[in-house]
Length: 286
Image 1 (spheres, rainbow, N blue to C red):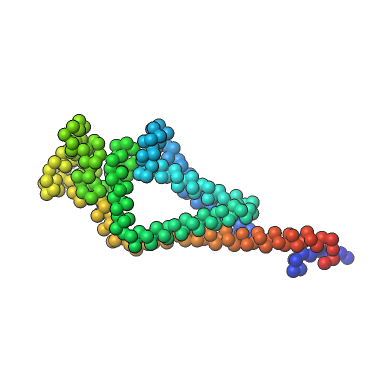
Image 2 (spheres, helix red, strand yellow; image 1 turned 90 degrees about the horizontal axis):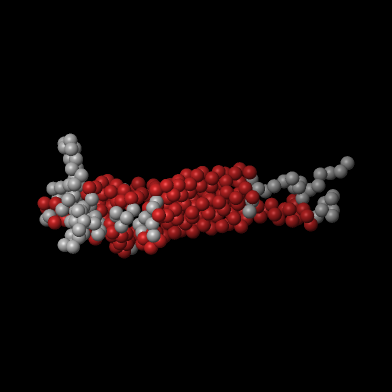
């Protein structure tokens, strides 16, 4: 009676090193990440951004501060990475899996390096944040998404401008220059205003002419402290929360790296087994 053909180390040819659990866990991991991160980012960009309707020079000028463009860049990047992970796991393609693993590793290292450098070079990081906020103030009226983001930040932190409320003079509409024909000359956005819950009617023009007032007088109507100091103080008082968020972002990345590396090793072992079996098919009794 014929025996079943055996492969390397006494295993039959139906044996596979590739674990279906690891394979489909990696696929589900990438698919969920793709649905939760990539699709919403691209959708938000297409549905809200004026990028396609504006001139290319204006778009490039707003590239570093336009939330919609940033969402699109992140969406495209994550689409490429998750595509490599999904297809690589289903097709058992080592090249795609290695690309996925390397990209996740690089992202993790960059995040870690950014955190360390931001802590060590806190002064330079503060200066960079100041530059970004200044650019955002300049382009405040150019992009509705950016405008909503700044207004949300000023309301939540109870602040106005970058270093101080007079930073709004950097915007062409709020500039205090004598030749500025805007009706908002020397004003600040409504989101800078101190709102009283006792008043039934809210004065939406409360920021009118606030830059012309002295600091103490303006402080009775608007938040005069800049958002940079408020942001720094918030970070210092919420270090444990930020650390938890960073850990929550790092764990899925490490899981993805681990699963992809395990699957790569299993595929390599399977390829070696197949090559061994092909080399010994001439002897069916081995």
